[in-house]
Length: 154
Length: 154
DNA sequence: AACGCCGTTGAGAACCAGTCCCGATCAGGA
DNA sequence: TCCTGATCGGGACTGGTTCTCAACGGCGTT
Ligand SMILES: [Mn+2]
Ligand SMILES: [Mn+2]
Ligand SMILES: [Zn+2]
Ligand SMILES: [Zn+2]
View (cartoon, rainbow over the protein chains, first blue to last red):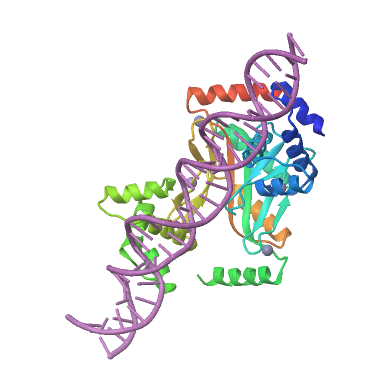
């Protein structure tokens, strides 16, 4: 797993440093959406440390190498997610409780491929996010009801 | 057109101020994706003025009222776009030249409606963005070629 | 037309995620 | 082991956005 990173770095003649290894380790071992602070905290928890500039630089590098993706869930900061051994998926974000759930839809790949070729566009990445309210908590369900009623009358 | 704003504000018992009118005017008269600075500049050009706090507050209000949408095209700041008299659409963003083009796909609405009901989710807004390279300029087309070749070999 | 309530406005300070600086350190090939 | 160029990191800095709070202005009432 770490060999993937080693290989990508060697290919570009970039050094495989302790910090890059540790940060990649944190990313590869989690399936969650981690902020830069989350990564720094995870490092501390294993007795490692990296300056915040290095954390940001390395996360950007992992994205560049195709080993992670960057997300903005409208929280005021970015989150990162491993792409190693993970299926492509998109996100549903609950604006009430903040929960992020994922989905895969078999038709989306085809649709975006069609769109790109129609527009003479070479698609590299896509961001598909649906914001709304989930039904996990009573508060979220309450907001769902309120929103549906408002939609009917306005 | 301005009556739409007047009505939404009255309904919520919010005052219809000169600044809100001027900023909404700027938004409604443009079909482009405007930053807060763009809005302030457009105001200046018509001899009007609003403090930056007011610009941000009013843009957020227009989004809240359903009269505008907010976009993040990874430029480090947000952009806003009128929703009054505009068809729903999504965006293709060229990471080489920054151009943003739009598209509509007839199947997307159905797909997101299905997804939402499958997940017990009440969808309010969606953000669909495709990042890549367009074919508008020679530089963009050059990057398209480079990217396709890299994709074949890596 | 004047009054009064209360939300709005605006100049600037504050905030904060992310970037930059640059001297010390390190990876890794010779 | 040596050498060199890239990386690291603490802290300063940036810039978009939000906050503060006294002055102001809608707008319903009288
Ligand atoms: Mn995810
Ligand atoms: Mn648009
Ligand atoms: Zn929820
Ligand atoms: Zn382009």
